[in-house]
Image (cartoon, rainbow, N blue to C red):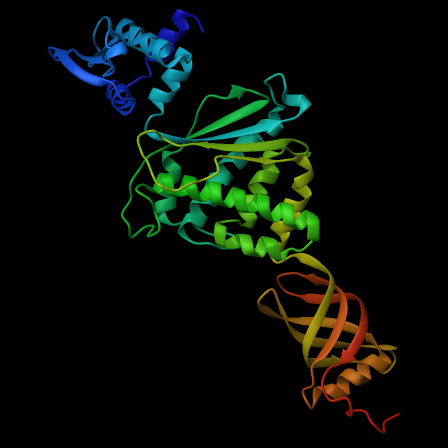
Length: 383
């Protein structure tokens, strides 16, 4: 960036933010020039000759020049680019969520237009899901949003995109709401949501890793308490593109103006091969899933058989992930009649199969190893 572009960029620097930045970085205020500028020096003896003149009035004729000189001194002292210094000053009071997609088709810093629209849409959904789960942990969010969530989302801004495959920046200014709105909040709702996003992304990564090893969806069940939801999974899936082929990296940069004591992991990566797992998890959270080799265990609550058919259907009240489901099982006739005889004495039955669950139904596919549990003498003497 040349000096002309830099001066244009500097116009976005607010004097009060530069003052906060200088103070937070250990610079010492050392006098003023009327009401037009403040003088800053380093407290360390070896750097005391470094001086920053901070302009106070954006309407001053030499405002851009003075701010340019201040940024140059900071760049020299910190050993960082002027552009990065300006970004940090501008965003001093904001957390930033960086969403990066990686694949050969975006290496040049451009993205297909439809995927670009999808990326921005799902980037917003990512923050929506994190905001909602900061207030209440749920498997799936639908319907209207709490007023505090709406107010927070209205403060968000998309920053400039960056090269590095393709990077979208979401800027979240630090804002404070009452403790009634979000009792578990840190010193600001922004920081609470940022920390919640970091925890939920980490829990998602852990659940993916365990699912890859075991194919057990219960690891995603455990992740709900950390803010993982169908909405979060859908957001990451969408960010990966319409073909679901891009790797996704989400990182969180915390505002320097607010400190907290929580330790969070700030960078999270999801590979394209993880996207089908997230899709499975999303369907699971929405109540659409399959559990392989599941044992349906419980009492028979209903029996159906037509005289012309060589099978019967029973429903078994069984506990599935903490919720009672009425599971339909189609049985051959000898197993069906055994289930009928187990119904009246309320003896439990068990049967293995692949359990298919939707929000309104549950049924066992390829049932096998049916048995009645309990009284082994139930059928003595019967043929």
